[in-house]
Length: 439
Ligand SMILES: Nc1ncnc2c1ncn2[C@@H]1O[C@H](COP(=O)(O)OP(=O)(O)OP(=O)(O)O)[C@@H](O)[C@H]1O
Ligand SMILES: [Mg+2]
Image (cartoon, rainbow, N blue to C red; front, top):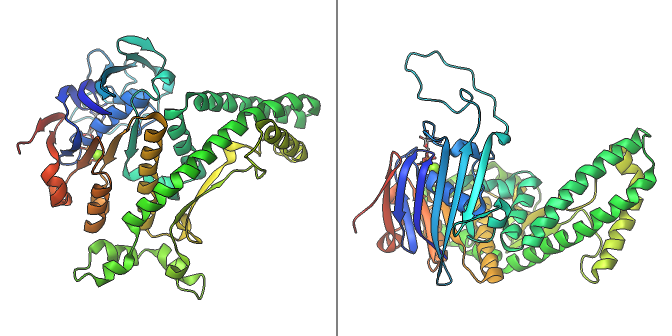
């Protein structure tokens, strides 16, 4: 699918934007703080009703917006038909508590205002003019986003990887999303009950019902995650090899890229060499995605049998759960590991390798969403080229060459490989305005 038209009203630093967009590679070029990432953020909000940059969407309302609301409208071509999505975010915070009004030059520095509760904004979603709930927007317009912060997918805490799995699966399987939100409600109730049992305010028998609820929701969630990871394995490994592989080719090259030296100097790489007598490359191999659910029983087979097994394991964990007053087993404790051969890349990978893992995973996500829905998601690449060496930049752009629509932001035009430059549509972003560049 692709966006044919993007309209913004009082969104971030855009007062008014109306932009017709073709397919293919679209490059948004501009200096820092001009509004490049804001464009990608707007598209992500049209797709998911959420921002990939902030959890407090009221931030997107332009500071001096007279109506205290921001509007994102996209017209999307999907399977030959046109789809209109409109998301309006209203900042309902009381006057005076909003984001900075125009700062007075001589004003003394104010202490940073505490983050406002998320309840201080309202979101309204319309699809083809009909009001919809935000959750029903998921899956209409699908996007895959890659920004520098997505390195956290690899090196960040496990919650980052679970969020990735959930966002991917929610975009394609609405029942997954529903099960997930019910599961989180069960976790909250069950944890409260465990604490009451610990305080002897309640009998442990009351847990039977919640064990059953937890298991019934947990099993389809874990199965969906396992199935996605299994499906992502092949494309992720292929893309990782394309993006990170063949280090020996680099050493043969006459011109050594600066990024290579940076990689060689990364402390994590030294650690990899220090752990054993064997040289790290010999132990490395293709990328492997390893799903590590906290539930270690069999996930395949009759669902009722798996549910029963999980319930039984919960019974064994009873005393521990009561003592901790916490849910210790279930998909909220799942982990996903990235190995190259036997080497855990989160711990021992170089920065370049870790970035390649995150990118490969995102592109595998795109392939998965496409095969599940029959529609190719729009790819949003925020500021990725500046962090890659010349060869990887070319490899990445080659890997996404045939996609229907790719929105890419860059600050430095020289980061764009010649081949991509020749086929890209270029846009100049300056102070909340966008102009198509000639040629
Ligand atoms: N709610 C808002 N109202 C008005 N302006 C905003 C709002 N939120 C952010 N901005 C402004 O938007 C600009 C940042 O835009 P954006 O993040 O898109 O920059 P960018 O072009 O991607 O820059 P970089 O190259 O540094 O990533 C900043 O100047 C910021 O002050
Ligand atoms: Mg940016």
